Every structure is written in structure tokens, then in C-alpha cells.
Length: 392
Ligand code: CMC
Image (cartoon, rainbow, N blue to C red; front, side):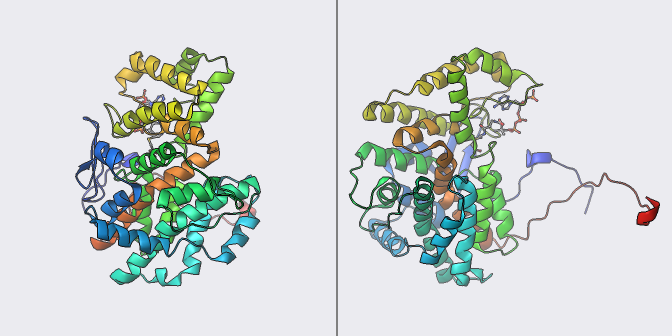
């Protein structure tokens, strides 16, 4: 009832009440369930944060052990799913494969189709998703290389097992530097939730039709793929590479980003909510220096990134519009140092965001939110009569 007004991009429209993530864009504050992101990134593990987001409290050590055990029981994916991997061209984008494979899980686990699952059924689907996603992601990568897949090793922790399936060989165990495992935890934690962003809103709105969790997450993965959202981490490295190949002239590229006739934007810069700084970017920038230092990597694109950031932060255009580096600006440089190819970056974002999507879906169900259905203001033609084909 009442007049309808529109708010393209929902810049100023609240769609829900949520108790999961607190974000203050003016102050650069981000908290999961009340805990500052800085503390979680420093001291916590990814599964602990996943539990916190999904169930609301930090787990006791017994609860965490039990959560880990349950997850490790479901890390295999159905052998028939291998046929899907075989069907994709080896160079197809990992994000397209991921959304398809996650959606396909619903075909293998039809109990997820119950629109009113019991708590036990809902938890089982949540556990299966958390368990199978790293296996799917690693196998997508192995397939791109034409290498045999590595099966999950359940005695390893969640992140270590993922890295083993990704970088291990059938013939030998890999030795993974502790700093790599710890950087991976940190990155996944920093990506784990970010309140009502594009992909999360997608997950909630798809879920609000009582679509199953796998289908809802698959839709979220598709939303994340876009370069204005999670796809920015791949776009940043591609941009930095282009600048490097163009002689490292960052001033020229800054000018391009400011030119309103040029569609180019400075990737990894700007945010709908953060208007001061993105606290995730601050942590990632530091981690980036540490990881490259530890691994003895000297990546010229890091120098370009720093130069670009410094120049942009002094530039009136960026100052006026409050544009700062976001989470995607430095994350790709770390992923690259860890050995991931560029087109896997957004998939890693999805792996990190999974607990947040699940938590938001679960909250939406628990709150019994109505089906999402925005209104519009019609601007098309007024009534007119059908004209038969031979008279047009
Ligand atoms: N480079 C150049 N100009 C920019 C940029 C940029 N990266 N970002 C915003 N602007 C300008 C924009 O042109 C507009 O200028 P004007 O007022 O003169 O028309 C002004 O700043 C406000 O931008 P907007 O597009 O209205 O802001 P938005 O809230 O709709 O968009 C954004 C937010 C993140 C999509 C945008 O800043 C952007 O495209 N950034 C680059 C892509 C990127 O890094 N995305 C990752 C976002 S963070 C992680 C995630 O969501 O996954």
C-alpha cells in the first residue's frame, strides 16, 4: 500500500534484520557476531569462524572437534559427479563449473529438497556443503591441468586438506609451509561474510522461494562471479599485469579510471558501504607483505599495486568519492604467491564466503521471511491492440 518509490541497486533500502555481521562503513568496522574481524583473522581458524557465523557462538573445543569430525565424514563427492568434470572443456571458467556442480549436489542429495527440513536434515545439508566444496574446488583445478584428482585426507585439517587436494600429487604427500596454511585461513576468514552484499542477497532471495540450499548457494556463486563483486580479485591482477606490460605507467591508468567516457574502473577500488577504508584490505595488505617475504617471492605487480594505491589516495577524484582499496585489491597477489592461477581467485572467494551464505540462508529461514519480491514503477507503453502479423 502507498506510493512506490524506487531505489536502483538498493543503495538505501534495507531488506532484512540480521544478527550475523555488523558493518560500519564510515568507521571501517567489521564484526562477525560481535567479534572484530581483526581478532578473528589473527587468532581463529576458518572452521571455527564458520561455526560462529552459522550457529551464532564460538564453539567449545569439544563442539569444534565434533563439527570437524562430522565434516570429514562427508568430504567425498559422488563418483558419478566426475562425469560432470569430464564434460567441461578444460579451459572453462572455474566459477561456471562451481555454480553448476554445487547446484548438481541437490540431485545427489534429494533430502535437501524438503522445503521444511527438520533441524537435523538442515544441519546435514550444511555439513555436506562445507565438506564437499573444497573437494569440488580442488578437482576443478586438477581437471584444468589434466591431472588426476586427489581424494580428501580426513586426518588433515580443513584448509590443509584443501591445499593438499589442490597442490598434492597422487605419488607424494606435499609439505606445505605453515605460513601458507595460515595465510589461507586468514584469507578465508576475511571473506566469510559481509552482510547483505549482492551474492548474499541473492542467496537469501532465492532461498525465500523455498528453493533448496544447494540451489540458493549456486545462485550466490553466479552473483559473486561478476567483476564488480567477487570477480574483482581476478580483474585486479589482470589490470596490474596490463599496467606492467604497458611500461608500469600507473598515472596513465589512473587517468583512464577517472575518464567518464572510458568504461575502465580501477579494479579493487571503491565500495558501496566502506567510505573510509575497508578493514579487510588493511589486514590483507599486511599479510601480503608477510607471505611474499616468507616465501621469498618478489612480485613486480605488488610494487605497481602499492604505487597505484598511493597515487589514488592522493588524487582528488578518489578523495572526493571516498574510494579506497577494497578486499580484492591485494588478495590476488597472495593467491598468486600461493600458486593459484588467476581464474581460481574468485572460486577461493566463494570457498571463504560459503559459511556466510549458509548463515544468512539459515537466518532467513528461521525468521520465516516472506518470499522476496521487489516492486517496480512501470514505464512501458500504455494499452494498445494486438496487430496481426501480416499487418505489421
Ligand atoms: N574507479 C573509478 N571510479 C569509481 C570506482 C572505481 N573503482 N568506483 C566508483 N567510482 C566512481 C563512480 O564512477 C562514481 O562517480 P560519479 O559520482 O562521478 O558518477 C562514484 O565513484 C560512485 O560510484 P558508484 O558506482 O555509484 O558506487 P557503487 O556503490 O554503485 O559501486 C563498486 C561500488 C564496488 C561496484 C564500485 O566502486 C566499483 O565498480 N569498483 C570496482 C570493482 C571492485 O573493486 N569491486 C569489488 C568490490 S568489494 C568486494 C566485493 O564486493 O566482492
